[in-house]
Image 1 (cartoon, rainbow, N blue to C red):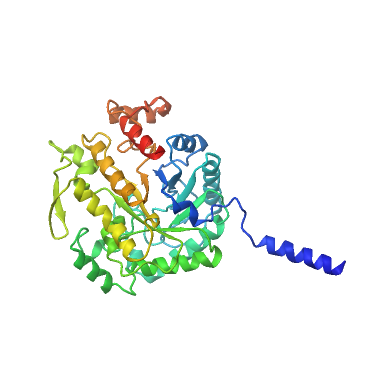
Image 2: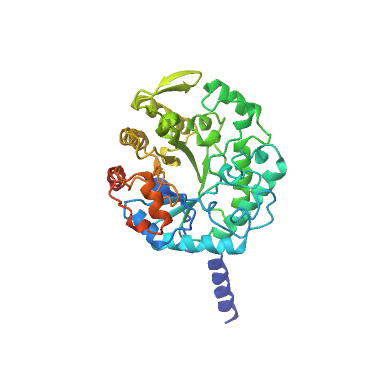
Length: 396
């Protein structure tokens, strides 16, 4: 009897160390191309929101919580000026949202816009926060934040990856051009090795802290200079962890795809718009878009990484731009041709309609804001042609 009880106790203890079978703890979710959307709302989304996204054919959502109202100035962090632990009420809110996504059948990649010492510019009086990239004390706080958050979320079945920071830009204040020549990008990265602006080194530290409490959940890392694929290609090597997804964002040529272009008397067109790129001028067309995106995949291949470890985590253009459809098609074609993952920006953003592709071109921005302010956003027409395109591509 004693031996039997001993064996039973050993079995129970062994089982207690195994993560729940329902947890999204496997990198295998990412072994085949996954397509989804970004959720950057100011109000925590509910199950109906996630079901609407799932109905488009999306399998995952890249979710930021940084816009939500929390206990302190910065949601979940408390205060990006000095991190002293996760805020309990904020964590409960995040868990509730994750539960809603799980109920809708979506996997979630959580993506903070801020870390200690790197408050999102739109919540920082419009000023770029460079402290994380200049003061080692903040990198220590960022490591602690992610150790705490991964410990809290590691067994939630909705989680498909931790995206460590949205659009880091340690290069921004150093004089390096965003789309500088590749030799210049590589030289800059080499010069930063071991310093506070060494993004891969910071990622290694954060991932080590995560792995101490969560050995399984995949990690997604944005490349530098606002997740530019060319900044990724300047990294000398892949990260040491095997469960890492390498993410880039695609809005190039930004001068044409972004909101300021819509205020021009004659907006830039695609194909044809010319911008400064790699030390010269580049006329953007399908081939240029493909080459820019291929930069990330070619780097991954050179590092021995499969293409299913590369993610176009954001891409988009202004919905009222005349060339948005052609641009979206070229971006998706380029990523799909390489077997990568993607997530369009964005799905039903609650305070901005610029890239809400469900809205038809006939709906002018003023109508969106009026209905939203009246609490009648449910009356917005959602039959836009651009979302029909995205649905078709997600369901293929």
